Image 1 (cartoon, rainbow, N blue to C red):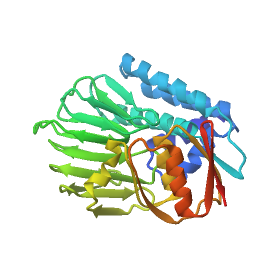
Image 2: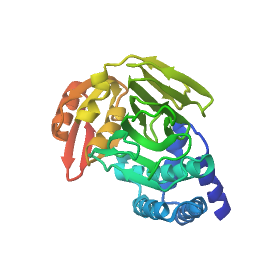
Image 3: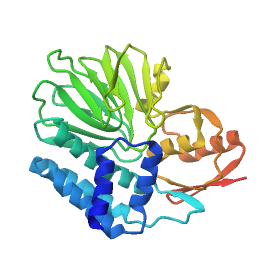
Length: 329
């Protein structure tokens, strides 16, 4: 039985699966049934992957494992109400993402030096400068793995979430941002990359310079021109090139929220990253209608929900402590 759980989790970590399969896996992972066996399997896989990695890196990431494991143990609610505990779902996603990252780095040589892990909590953003001088602005619930020093033929980092990169120019050492089966390669340029675990779409927006985007298990590649946005749907394998408003596309860097033709479910996913609240709603409460909204920096969740409720016309909400309850009219 124990070997069965090991194989399930190891297969998920090492494979590119559809969004629906990801959702099913996370529900299974944080479910109460066989929780002890699943926990043992997670730690077993962790121990196997961390062998051979630098001691300092293992210690840093081990703490993340302990933190998210505590959250995963929390009990799931009844099936008739969907309680979106963002910290709980993120715990499962982050844990598997970290395991995937370690598998990726240990098997595909992300870097040959100590890895540093930078994580941005819910409702926060951060800026940092990488060892080569590249400037990075990271969105909430984003993890970036990078080396203490870049060595070898490329400067490679691993992204789980969303970040903007102003790449220090070095034609002899390309800058590569990896995220499972999605990566962007640049020499000296500025681009925005979005690859949140659990999201159905991945995207890259080129602000200046030139980048190569690889996707579809690295089997496909294309070159982006300035002002172009590449979007790839993990589930449908659909790819698109568009020319978005660059101010809107990078609005998150200014603390703003911009939604264009977005469903309420997708909006809530973003709100859970922006605000430290869990959302509670019945499965049939949210319709599939699309909405367009723009909210300035430091707009409170109450102000946001007031507008969303009024425009949608079919929901009301109530905020209590750290939860936002969405109810039908």
